[in-house]
Image (cartoon, rainbow, N blue to C red; front, side, top):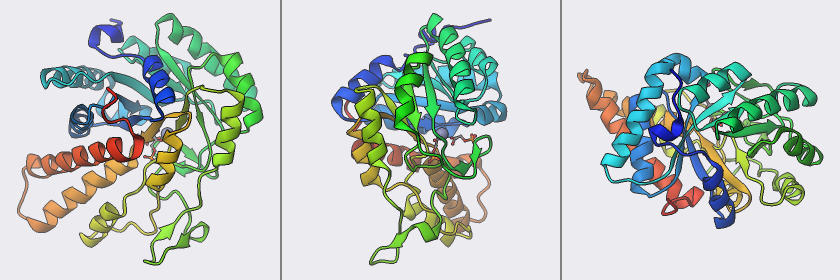
Length: 331
Ligand code: G3H
Ligand code: 13P
Ligand code: ZN
């Protein structure tokens, strides 16, 4: 049976984005596919009084089961309210790649969907995105489209090299599709290996420093669609502390490099009003679980390693909201 997101307690992203653009901050969009991640996102954003977008990829939907996920998300809103947190929460489909998937999510309580037609030729991207917008807007659900291609490999999101967004296309795309927000490609990419070592320089401590994001493209986009909500995918910082903890406890992540926090802070002050973070959460959980296993090889109660991983993820989320996205206190 179809369910409306408003009855569950979610909001769409329209109001959130309006406030974020005028306030010079970005709404965090954190991915989840299990209970501990979801608890950490809601608790971290509740504690830091930040609006939040909880997002689900099609891979996550397959992994956790779509019915299970729908009730988990509903439970997360209830848990937040019982804890006294009043922050607005949107439930978003991340990288939806077809119309039927978007419809299915909207019917099961999503308040926002992304239709990612970036792998298609321009005209096909417009056609598919417009079709999703028509269905979504009839249900007061907001839609994110994408122009330009991000490099990087995830379970279901893959591209060999990035193709930057062409600012000359954005007015036409936004007008023809009716999207509520636009993901653009300015040098971010998915996963923990965002840059090849040869693209980076080394600072005095030998740490790899990636090339800066293409703020010139972002500025050109902003000039053409002033105040329109822009989204940045692939925005994990791949925090060195957790990469080192993984490696020192038997893991093997070599030359993992993310987007420096100061670049994200600069983007958040502009028309970028949604910043997507998944890999950082994965790294935190993996690092802490590894540490527990290294320190206590006899441990076999999942609560004893998933619990500390969840607690550390809450800390990371509070820190991101306060010091990177600027969304803390804006709920
Ligand atoms: O942008 C992709 C997200 O990080 C989701 O990744 O498809 O592995 O769930 P996933
Ligand atoms: P990261 O892999 O940088 O966390 O990006 C996540 C993302 O863009 C989800 O859509
Ligand atoms: Zn993404």
